[in-house]
Length: 242
Image 1 (cartoon, rainbow, N blue to C red):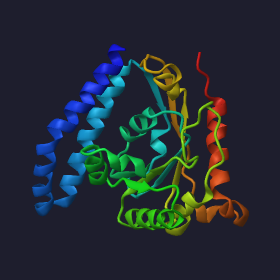
Image 2: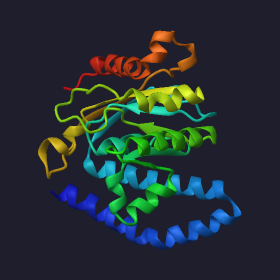
Image 3: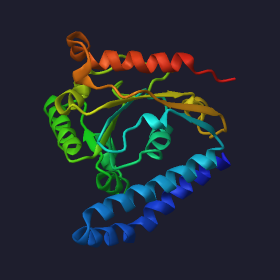
């Protein structure tokens, strides 16, 4: 319980102390928008890394060299835990927005930081909003901002991947950006498997080789979600947690 309380306290203090920081960053943006974006990215990454350290998790990152540093990418991963966001965002080399559920807009300060970090909010009950989300992500990618999605649409309760929503991969097929498949193993063991306790465990995050949609067969391009999911499952099958 101590670990959970420390993480909750850190989040509260970060959001509270971040109020003047957001105001300062707003002024910085008038002079150098990119400097503002990078400073926000690094500050949040520092906070996430500290939270992960508090969990006591033994985290192994594999294949980070597969992430291109010279272009925007579409990160695609399986989703078992809230900590998947911390595990992956803390490693992003450049500006990256996450697709989040629209319910996150209810939380002041948190939503302000998310917007500042180019997160896009999806109302899963509104088809038109979903199309607008994809168009926004396409625009971000064209501007050099990577996007991260968890195409299952929600967290897996049993650790088994649910079918990917094919529509969410359109932002890659429309821009031609590389897809980086991410296989996350055992992250639910940090928190979700024994609520409300945060416990140390072994976690593996593997980044697969980039997938370039235009280099695939027509059949794989048509079912890009299924193709990417297969690549993620192949990595998961190789992970072993003692």
